[in-house]
Length: 572
Image 1 (cartoon, helix red, strand yellow):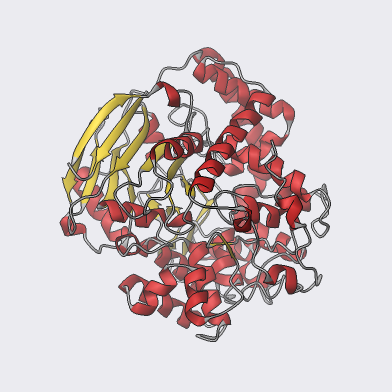
Image 2: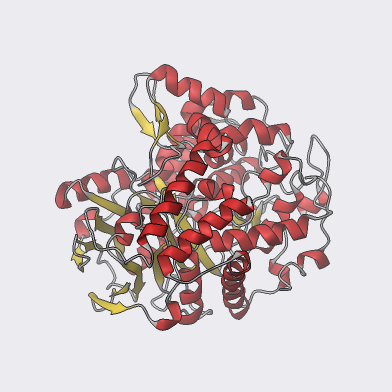
């Protein structure tokens, strides 16, 4: 167990044992608690006092399937509060297999200087000058870095958006095929990385010095059982390999909760053209891959390889949230155009969600017409070039709304909502409003409860409790390094027991269901404490007024959960 402390000002890297206060933590738990401890809440997110924390999950680097996830934490330039953004690919498992609990980056390189942090197979790290990489988009950058350091390396990197310090800038992660198509998208953390003068982390994939397991035999037994559970589960074992997350397009449209045309409709006209079924058929007809392993040790294969009419690779993976943001919100029902927009977002280094909603707000304000794919592609290229309008678009929907003086801006804490309208899924609206992260699709998503008819999506009743429980569970899950999709099976108490035994076999400390919940609560308390000290109040835990004032077709509902109930959600 070790920290790598990287000082960009002095260009030094120090290795230290994990301080006692952070032992037993991983992923989001480690990033949020360390940021709360070490980052001044009032600091400039793009200044030298902010720190970036790259923390693999508690189980990342072990043999457990679907655990190649890393949390990246800092103060967000988008929300002004604490932020954790989660991504898969190859780097997380590589860091775990080197026994690296976290990489903590502080300070700033001298203006105009750019660096790569190289971590070799022994876990030794050094900053290397990378000024020749300035302005490079991520696909060309990763090709260059793998050519320099070797194919058996993983990369976390930023594109031009990060160097331009745009608030929608992502951190791109290389997948199992060495392509930068995984994204830690939310919160503008790519801009924080750019402000540090750090273009990329390059990590050797062949390291073999993971932290020791407390009980290797028990871990092996429970890991085998958990993998079998995932294979037999209808969602993780069947739907995900067949359709991926894009399978949700038809489901959420059927609920009238698919925010379209900048959240003025709950269904998308022509949705069947961009559904998971249509996507899978198109990929199959063109010779792409409908089932693809994007992240190390994944057995769900929820990823896909989208190819053009000639069979040439375009992007991976074309997922539900991107189909929504670049398609539903903009009114574009052309999968080829959406795939090109997704590829551009990855290449420029942008959160597809925040950026797609930014395009939609601009369209809604009359800057370009809904459904105009070429206009959307042109706007993306403006972001990539850093033009005046590109910078506005690249700073997200709130910046676009301010520029056009447009009232319909679907954000909370400046971060865009996700692909579930809060008027059609009231509990998701509660999560959007109250999550310390800003509007978010992973912080406490209740779509499964709505599709399973366990909760009425249109009634305010029971939504706060459901959101609270989901936010606690997700905060705990994000500590472990297991992917969200694999984590869906943990709602079954027997499966959760298997998972908790895995944690115990790793750490040597028993944990029960109450301890699991306590872990999530501890993380949420740290995050809320940081935001409170940064100046956040209950007024920041609100949806935009238009959600309460403008009924959403086809149900013609508004957001109905009272403010006083929102304010009670974290009374634990």
